[in-house]
Length: 340
Image (cartoon, rainbow, N blue to C red; front, side, top):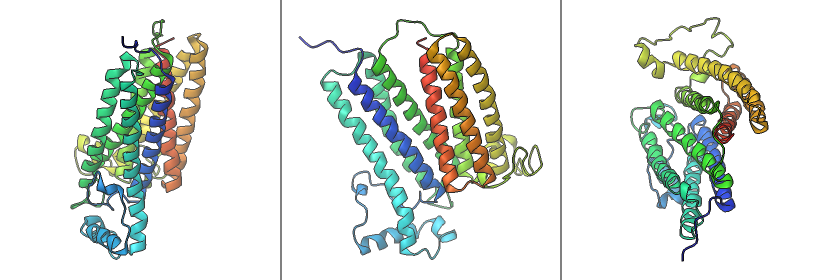
């Protein structure tokens, strides 16, 4: 007679937390890859053999020769030495290697837990979805890279935003399912503030996607004053000679302005959500109010400091790490409100 499937699993909880942590690392390495203009250094997608980097001088020269065919090399990096190429190559190789490791860390335990009947029944379908999203993310990553190999200096900001957005979806789902695996089914109904907590998660996610457009267009290196943009509320070149809808995603001044103002909406929403959590009367939700306030304040501060310093690598990565922290707190708080 088969054993009954458990409702909680400490092993599944730890496994999914490890996956979530690795996705965090992947997001940060991906950010460094973008900010160092390293993402186009590997011009071929070899899911299996690509795990082995060049091991000889001839191999390195062959990789450099492939890179020389890209518009980025022709227009921006012409004359790059082999040593300079190796630096950007290792960033992109590391990003892809980490992606492969995440796949292995997810897939192998998944099947082990599945066949040993260790996965709670209600998590079976969501974990299959998570597995599918991870596979899809690999294709999205290559789809993004291909947009920059011909006639562009950088990858498409639309595809970059899709890739980053999917990474945060995978991270958030991993974290949510980890909590479900650890604590099981709640016998309590959701708090009335739960829909607002979920809406806050969505708002933070939207702000992260808008940040991808800022990164994709290097819009964080213009109008480096705050709170106004070089003394203006709406900066010069806002529309960029195009319509509003097109400018919202392709005009550097517009992209930065929208990211700024969505950040202000995040602050307002965080204040209202924290107030509601504090009034709920539940101790765990009161703790959530403090964490939401602290994470939001930290991220806004990092955003302003990064902007006024014209987005150097160190501050940009700190700002991205702040986004991960705020999104994590938002997801955990939303999960808690559904079990209050």
